[in-house]
Length: 158
Image (tube, rainbow, N blue to C red):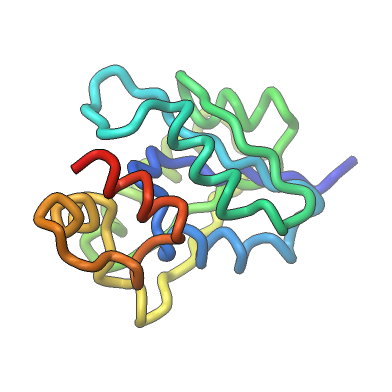
């Protein structure tokens, strides 16, 4: 049985903080699925297709990464592909309460799947997709926060 993990998120847009969590998780798994949430209740700047494209571009040199859009419960996707873990990133203490609740709920729905938390490196802890979008909207330099492809896409949306 393969050691498979799922790294879910809205990734609107995919930031260097997201990429850092992903690249740090890669060595622990044979296959890592990045699933881009298609959440109808959440307003996004980019379509699922555009967000998948951003993640694929950022991970084009990584092996054993599968990037796809997904609508539904992450735990259902994880069960379907026989994942052993769900990867989540924690930036600040404020993230922990929500993430702990989700991990506990997912454990109840699928006790065979672990949630593994990666804490963000100090140089990324202040980066959020919302803040990056706001900075880009006002025409400031976002090159330290996102890949060149994502920067281009954000600048096209201004």
